[in-house]
Image (cartoon, rainbow, N blue to C red; front, side, top):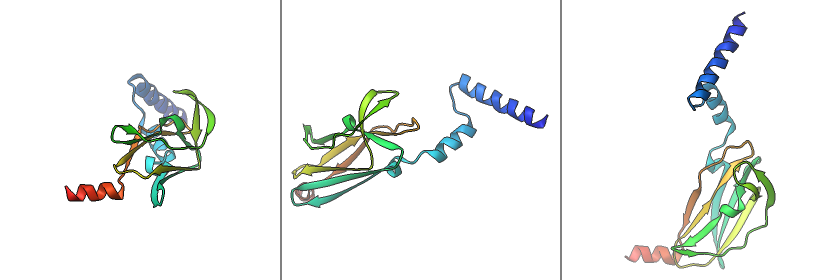
Length: 148
């Protein structure tokens, strides 16, 4: 009898939360435990090389980055980079899209301005992160900033 009352109470709370458009604390706690932070899901790093900057994302298992959400900009100029093809994925929001997982690498050619890197990804469970932005500053650009 006690178990039936407890289940009924949980059902009522879930129904009320659904009616008012909010998550119950029980399901929110479970979701927070299951979903990594954006920096854990997509570990970002970069290194300077003779021909530019190599940027990396180590994408956690069961997470992916949208290939078409990447953008590389130096000021208002789009920086062209080569990227792997990726694989097709049927996404609930965007439809059939190419996604990248595992180790994602991109070489950004040498540049004299800061380059902003834009990307977005999701968990296979359906949780999507807002668009992300990272900034890489070239040595030339950093010296110019220090002198002004």
